[in-house]
Length: 150
Figure 1: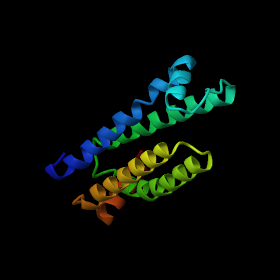
Figure 2 (figure 1 turned 180 degrees about the vertical axis):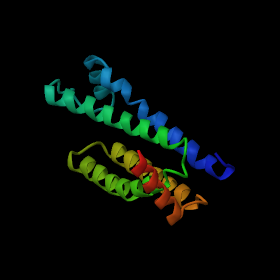
Figure 3 (figure 1 turned 45 degrees about the vertical axis):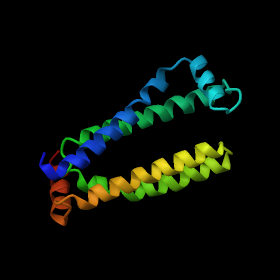
Figure 4 (figure 1 turned 180 degrees about the horizontal axis):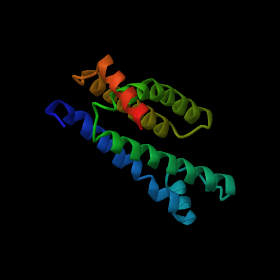
């Protein structure tokens, strides 16, 4: 890791830790989920198989994304093409997640908090990737060649 890679590396690792913390919800007792649901002012927790499946599988998906960011943090220059690819994907994610929040009538504070945090995260990632000194077409080619040899 070079000096210029440090901000992106630590941003990815911080992101990974936050996302990996979702692992707890995969195994969390339903009673705890219900308590958190009530505490957030979302009313009674619907204890149905689909709700259980969705809460746990989405948490697991977040954890897997965290593992991916942690892995990429060890060689940010190699994974710059992938990180560049994730930026437009996360812009779409940001828009859709806020639209879902509005559609299902989440509390206003939730909508604002989630909207601001995911948008800020995307902007920071974009800026760090953009300012990475080796963000060139040559990196794209070396990434593709490394992937082909696996």
